[in-house]
Amino acid sequence: MMMTKRTGLAGMALAVTVAGGLTGHDRALASETGSIAAGQEIAFDRTKGNCLACHTMKGGDVPSNVGPELVNVKDRYPDRSQLYAILSDQESRNPQTVMPPFGRNLILSPGEINAIIDFLYTL
Image (cartoon, rainbow, N blue to C red; front, side):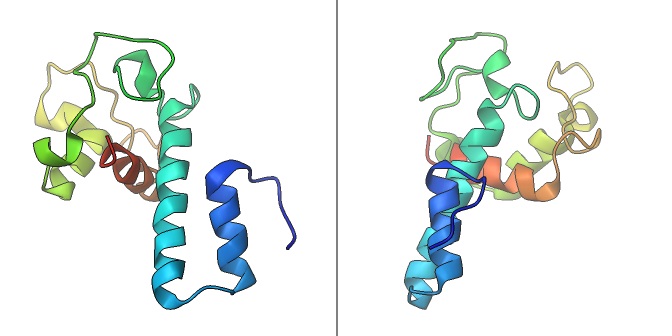
């Protein structure tokens, strides 16, 4: 199996999926696992999501209290589109927010926002 520059769980899931040795169900699970790992990587990346600058969450290295702690996210936001709207452009929903409009300002792509949501749904 040929490895690329991608590392960690996301890279392994992609490499195994590309190798084609998985059933349809296993391929979907590997894809979801890869998306979760990619979402965590983006969320923790100080040049992309930088969620840890404002939010405390499991796996984070620096607690913060600017924004709410990210726990029970799927229970708090069962409607995925609501969470997508918050990440994409919370400012249009709440003009007083300090949350950056990651989607509107093209900091994050729609795919990156969805990967972050996949990760947040594990918290």
